[in-house]
Image 1 (cartoon, helix red, strand yellow):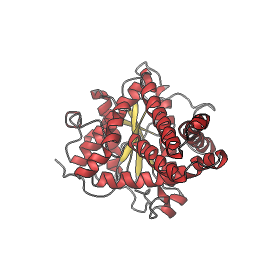
Image 2 (cartoon, helix red, strand yellow):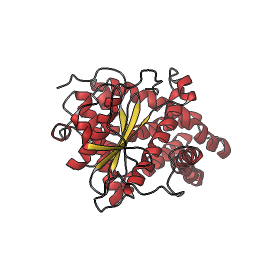
Image 3 (cartoon, helix red, strand yellow):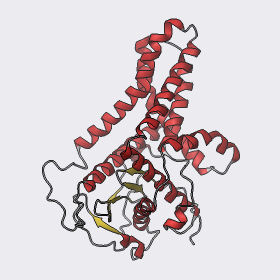
Length: 345
């Protein structure tokens, strides 16, 4: 059994379509269950953007920049998992993948950045602008600025919870939520120092303190406090504040969650962050053994890239390595390069 992890690097990831993406110091790895039943994994270097490298030591400021980098990475993982889902179900392996066409989804460049920008704009519109529009219609009947901001905050929180709960009824999203639970269990197992196999990983809880669901809840609560301090100005200024303040609130939320994750054993912090853990019940489901195998495969590959696992470890052979175009790659071989600029923690 390995020793519990005590360094400050926070491994993490996200669920994708029929798979899990894990992010390490050097690489990210996306493991996906192909229609044929096998696990395919694609790894790529994780390099922080120039801006992220410049602000990595600046608390609060780095949060919004790292959020952009994280969403970009996650979008690439989603595109890859969708491509794997289009492979044949006949049992053919990915050694003979479909010939790429001009319609094959791209994993980089302007389309990727545009997709991330649209996602952020959608989130701001639904969870920050829409609640304000609703409250503006109610404001003639609300005398207090304090009450107005509380009502807006409750509407915002209601939209978030309703959205998470509502999409969970879709069969495809239920499976994504289950892979989300598998990702959390695998991270817990690694941090606890237990063997990374299905039997040990399954014992851990679905909730994890560094989850993106927790991040969104903290953003909602912090934004309520900030908007209360701003009072109830005219609509144009109030609307602008909902857009401009979001990166700052995201930065503060990032620092709070990072601090909370490092001191998760403290009783007071456990109590403070318990609502975010409970909210994760909406976005996680109990995974089956196959899903746990996928999450473990992704984690093993980033651990190997970081030198925490021997490249000759037989468990790495449980997944077939491919590149972004689904072309087969040889097994991992050491050594990994030392001259590498890791992404910000």
